[in-house]
Image 1 (tube, rainbow, N blue to C red):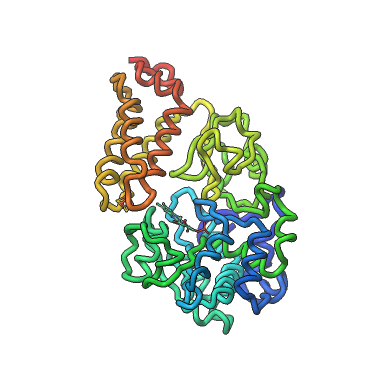
Image 2: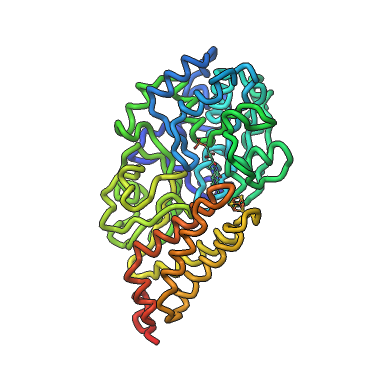
Length: 413
Ligand SMILES: Cc1cc2nc3c(=O)[nH]c(=O)nc-3n(C[C@H](O)[C@H](O)[C@H](O)COP(=O)(O)O)c2cc1C
Ligand code: SF4
């Protein structure tokens, strides 16, 4: 049991136990498990290794790691002294994997940051994370000379604090609010310098690829989804919330069973967190990959699964999430600031049993209005979640609008 997150940090029976292989948090445990960090990485060599590995970001968008590395080293960017940032802020309430990683395998994240930094000739290295996790990594860094140049910055506990432009803003000004993201970080990031920003789990995988190579990375997972990923599992019928390392391409059913959850007791799972989408039980045999879940508009995101039990009201579960997302707006862009609360209200009114037939289409209309209209992608994520709720639980929506709830059959009004 992880004392700080209160979560078990388990190595899944599906996975290869890659990220939590060290017996403890000390450098000696880390090197006993993984050997010393391979040094001397140049830009081209790491780029080739990352491209061959197929590693994609584990922070949400799933962007290929080699492309990001290529951006900060292209068109003279290298000469401008790129900056590398490890993003461990984990503002998503359903995610615990970054905290689990930083608190149990801090040296792996440090290795990834140093390896990426070495390859791009970084002028600065940052590790950005909430206080609890930061103190664990700081302790680990104090054990090693090569980590002295890493600057540690505390991330506030807020949903949007881990969004890329909010991270850069926090590093520059101490204010973790998103800002206009027209400029690409790879060209113009921290203080105008080319910036490579990765989720801490992505960097931990990068550290292992740096040690053992792309072929080794691909020994786990599938061709389309190589390697392993961390998944945070929580919700109905979950005996204990857990962070599990699973092989790429594992199906939702396999992941649920790995944590002792009986899929037969579930109606659906929310995949990808509050910005994610619902996947109904008849699709549990699909792999937890972007392609496998495309039909539902879901993707692994930061590796999150929240379960919903059969017989429970999906809309009652969805409404507080829609409200939370509205409350998480950084209040900087009109459509986000006004559209998200209105969208959440429409969902809440449906749940409350208001028999106004157009409420569902109103929620849908608002989702269409806010998507793509913010400086960051928060409104897009919130709109996606509400659209998914309306689509996957259409029968429940119609039932509510008709004055009854399938989860409470006696509720007809
Ligand atoms: C509202 C919002 C919140 C986000 N929060 C996080 C976060 O807490 N941690 C994180 O790593 N990425 C977060 N992201 C994604 C980052 O913007 C960025 O894509 C990611 O850190 C890049 O890392 P990767 O390439 O390793 O996935 C968030 C994005 C959005 C739109
Ligand atoms: S879209 Fe919303 S969360 Fe993003 S910057 Fe604008 S107000 Fe803030």
